[in-house]
Length: 342
Image 1 (tube, rainbow, N blue to C red):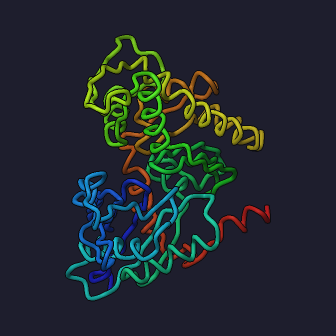
Image 2 (spheres, rainbow, N blue to C red; image 1 turned 45 degrees about the vertical axis):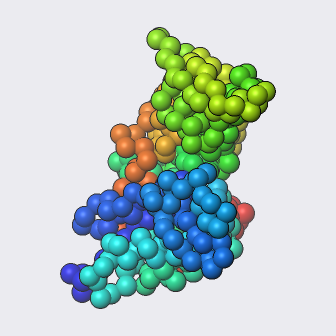
Image 3 (tube, rainbow, N blue to C red; image 1 turned 90 degrees about the horizontal axis):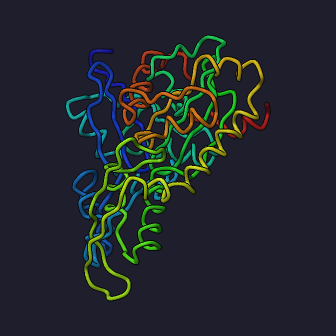
């Protein structure tokens, strides 16, 4: 039976979705974007093709992110998006696959049910849910089965997961909406305030990836950006430096640091002692902002390290968990309810 079965792990992110196929590794990396016809509701494209349409669509086409803040915001489009991904990796399989989906630690029972139903409608036979923090820790090579505390910070596109993992589960966590998207919006506001220039979110994201900094660099770098002048309404170019980026990203960075301190305050003292030795593991696209690990290290006194492949770390971890499907609970795990009972 195993010869014909395809077990799949999906890291369903706000900005990027990765699909891991057991025995093959990561098979797909697609932006979580769907383009639909406004009149008929028909899905025109998804993934990279749809992402190219963002901000460039005519009136009758909409390019939409069906996942918002790590959970489903448009059920129908999410189901069709998942169906497209699953069909691409199981095209020659006669059996419906078993699927692990990474979910935020703050997910509610209603949001859990929506993910299960969407995955089953997309072609899954059984659906298992795995907390993103556990997936990241596993992907980073941490043995989470031991009674040893490890802090994980996963900065995605819509949410940042800050969690302390021990004994195969999450001891303490905080999920905030300050993530990649919030950094982009902060850059747009800064350029508008300082240069009277309006730029798009795609341009802001390029700035963040190329010269984004939250900690002083030895050598400052700069980049020229084009946008619409708010005074004349005409196209104009300005030069933005990495020092400007520190100022632009200060507000969302402080919110992130506050959330880290909050988790540390709520963590039992024995686990905090473990964290000082084991350090902080960082993953997600937002963790690649230059100097973020240095800033967290200087503000907490705990060494922060970014994993080798921050975007795919959770998907690799969920892929490793495919070997343990027999011991995982199927369907709803109701994380929010479980936390209330602690």
